[in-house]
Image (cartoon, rainbow, N blue to C red; front, top):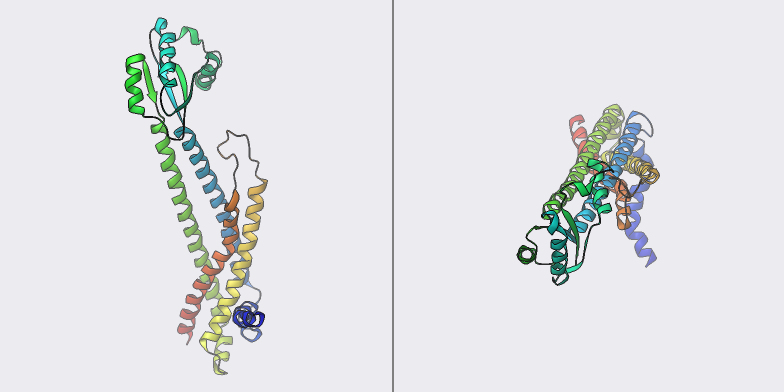
Length: 304
């Protein structure tokens, strides 16, 4: 079994380790090497932060949407003498409504805390006609909003039910668009990486035109020469992308998470999401393989 696996994986190991005779064609150092490694590292670094921002904001939007989906608010506006009566009537209706897990009227202190960011902490609630709010928690199945509105209209005419649908829908759309932006950003980064590697490969091929001509005279095929360039540039891209991904991950880890209410609270990856940054070097190597293969073949055809 071991000998069979060794036989099957030998071509891959040989391709990765390289051919010393063919590797002479590609300079080990120089402008093209630094450009390839540097651009791959920079693109992988940016890709890590694009992924981190995308999954964090998408996760935050999903959490807010889920919280809104499981809650609702009842606003009661009535003459001063009838507010408490309608609040009590509305609570009785909610207690007998299927799908309502719990319901409670917010205290004056809680309503003042909600309004303090806009009106200040010293807001005189007792002197203002501010509606009373009832917080509703739903069960997993939820309740019939239309049916509840009909019941409330009879028992508490001043009650207005807000099931948070108008707030939840924009969050769902925002999460979807954030995922789309992340995908487009990764594709743009991959395209930029391919362009930079193509330029580096063309520069290396042009700089070694005389060496390539000599190799052709002694019988080297274009495939032999192209494989050397593809292998070397793929390895360099993988190395650069790995360096950039590691630096990006370190940057994500050391960023302060902030308090729970911060927009970027918990910036980073969770669970299986940590696998995604480690796939960037592999993706970069695949991009480099394809880009260098086309670039080397085209350049060699032009030099023939």
